[in-house]
Length: 203
Image (cartoon, rainbow, N blue to C red):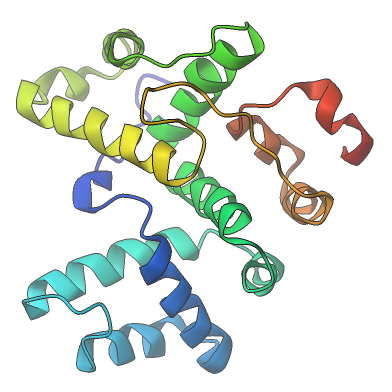
């Protein structure tokens, strides 16, 4: 546990909802992420100012989308904007263990404990606790830590799991989305703020 390292590169961007939709459409056309990357960069489909930015954003988005199964990607195009956001949040959790553990240990725990808000202090406490086991977190500068917190909270808002006042919003996953993501792993459901009793019919 102590030796397992966190990947903390998620400050590249937030949920990338609009951009992810573009890349998913391309993937369903070519079914090859390398081809998608080449197309995105050559045509500047992310409309970035520089090629370096295009490469960086594209690599980040693809690294997240690669965590989704083919069935999940196919389902994405049939979902509402809200449900798409949930699936992108799941991809973020799969990509970044730090965020996954925050989702389970803080976001979901707060919700099921009827503590309906999520504070910056919650993040700081979680970060400090993880620093005891992952010494490299201690080397992160305060400004970087603040940006990590800012980006994570913005992701939650874009995924419609947190209000602008930092009130937790219960996840309203559709039966189709639940059944698709639990095929991959039943534990996927714990990344969302929801009571077990609301999901038991699908698990």
